[in-house]
Image (tube, rainbow over all chains, first blue to last red; front, side, top):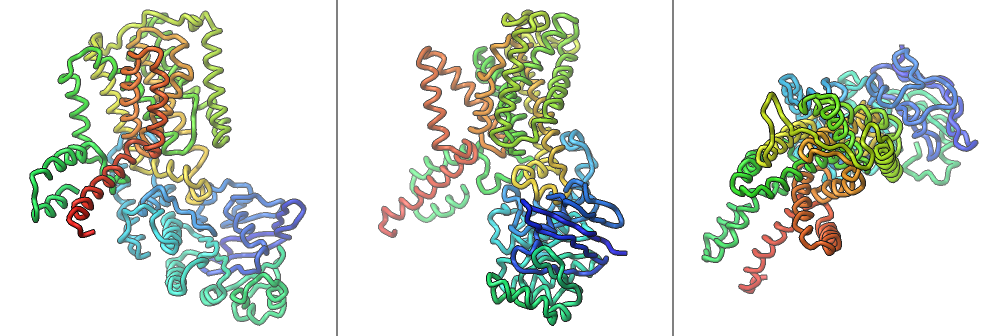
Length: 260
Length: 362
């Protein structure tokens, strides 16, 4: 049984088909990579899965449950975590608050119980803080836990965003270009971290431009081109696929880095 | 900050340094710590503030001082509620005077016509204000920025027109007179001093409530919604519900303030709930600083005093008032609280460097 399955999904913007009857499945416990030249519809697909936008037709199933028309926050409550292409940490909060805010749906209690600071709120807040520090420790950010998130350098903000997504204990993690803007050593750290996340039992679905990274960690890769799915398979088979080669080579705008 | 300076001055101590240190130490007691202002736990400094509020009316036993502070306290409740909605959730409301008015009229009608005690009316006012906020909040909180500002402004005006026209219920432009003093189980708050402690007791309670909110899950959700709604919903924060909850809560604060206002002024008339209230409380929040709850209270005290002092100058009062506001906004754009620290730090640095410059080392 696959954790996430997308069936015949179509999305149009002003008559241009961003996605054309795309179907794919993400198996539980795997790392799936999604690649494609610029404008292939990768980000659109991610927006549709996380609920920022709604598809024109088709269905999205998560754990055999139709989530096509659910609101974004309901999907996250089911266990879909995500990071963003342009990093979106909350700069007006401290680093540790960013993580504890990620635990939002796991902390229970009404507005009034928080305002009155009832005993069980006190313990749950304390536990949340402790857990957040553990997450920060595993990401190597514990030294800056009291700094404002906006003061972190870009690479650290990306890590923080990943930590925030992990804090909600998702079942599937959607990573939108996690390596963009990072240095090589940071990318290596990130790859290790993602493999670790998978070992902890989280399924990872990753969109990436950086071929070396995604080929290295993914179990399976799908290739999107002009809104259509042109190849699917192991990294090795995708690398050799002539259709994929052609898709990348005919796009002049895609840099050398993008070529498989 | 202070011990560091002392250590350095051990080398070449001059008597004049003491004159720098004493005011700096005093300021450090009052001003929030600039590096850790984002820490939201309760601190020893809060006790200091509480002591100052408690002792002030005993030191200055002037009834006029008490009365102005009572008004400042009512504005502080309004500004506190609004700062949760504006400073934390990043929304804007120009219609809070209407909730203030709903609270005042609920108390006025319940106490003068139906014989309820002011204590019951207080809770009824908070409830009615939040019920109205829930009804109008559901549709209009989908709007953003200017549109939300206009919608809430419109709501405030509609409320005023309704109050003026429904003469039977609200007494029209004349209003309702003879609202009894606030009283709990026979104890009547009939002097300015008693009212001072009543109002500032309520402010303290609501302040602790707000502070508990902002240092927990609720406050984090508010800040998250203010910065990035996409990111907020990606971790499971229900954005519309968060906004609605805090709108209703801030309306409840305004309702409480309105009820207390009606009991203290013993009248309720539409003049008191128009833009003449909305603009000052928005100013208090902005001047006090967005994203802090100490600021709005400080802003409320400052602006109420300013209005009181300037009222002596009759026709010049409004021009002077606006010039002072403009200057404050130019020099303290992030609010007097946060910006003051930066200024003080700059001055400390300037003094330290000045000495070196004088010695020809820099």
